[in-house]
Image (cartoon, rainbow, N blue to C red):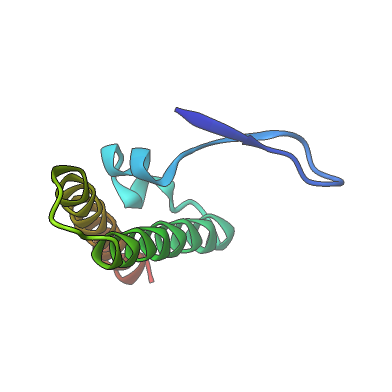
Length: 96
């Protein structure tokens, strides 16, 4: 899936959701410093969102099956975000 971003003075830009970057090597996206900064920001935003979802899931646990599923899903999302952030960091270091 993709999302289209539009900014004043810029053309429309279609980008992958951060989760879809997992399918690519982070090094493939690093063509210039702007791309590196964008990739770092996307990893940071995904990680922050996943941490927030896990926090919410922990606070809303009531022992029901739904709350346990939400917690497991949030934990898995955070694990994926952490793994991606580490891959991005490694690619940035190797590029640096």
